[in-house]
Every structure is written in C-alpha cells, then in structure tokens.
Length: 117
Image (tube, rainbow, N blue to C red):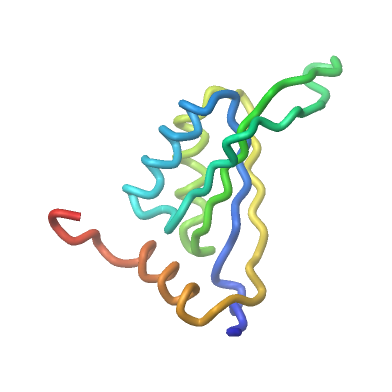
C-alpha cells in the first residue's frame, strides 16, 4: 500500500439516464480528466428536495478516479455535459492505495494520449 498523498480523488456523480452517464464517462476519460469511470448499471432510487418539494428519481452512479489537480476542469466538463441544473459532484480523497494503481492513475491524467490509442 502507498499513501495517496492527497493527490488522488474518487468523484461521485449521479445521472438521470444510463446514456447520459456513458456519454459523460467517455468524454472525461478521452480528455484525460479521469483515469477511469465506473458506471453502476443498476439504477439507484434517490430521494431529495428540489425547489422546496420532495422528489424521487431513478439515477445512475458514476465513480470517477482522477487527480486533485484535474478536479476543477473535470467539474466544469461534467456541469457542461450534464442535464441537471445542479449535478452531484462530490470528490473524496484517496488516502491509500496500491502504488501501481495510483501511479497509473496519475499517468493517465497527466500525459498526452499517444496517437492511435
């Protein structure tokens, strides 16, 4: 195990449709804003207050892995692409993880993508 050093983050984003989640996931990974995005294929049942009214929705969870230095740009892209007026964007520090995985994560969001990949 390696201490994450506060550099890596897990970001949680909920989407109203699977198609929207997939579109956002492909986009942020292709722009190297996230190393990986997992989409939970079973919808979650969400209860929340919106404009003083209790709401209920079926949503899909995106779990994004990124570096702290890419958070602002990742959030801007998610907001730009998301259908919600106020999309969920919660970043949690990765305090520990395998050295190899965290190195891969950093490399994915730091270096230009090679041609043909």
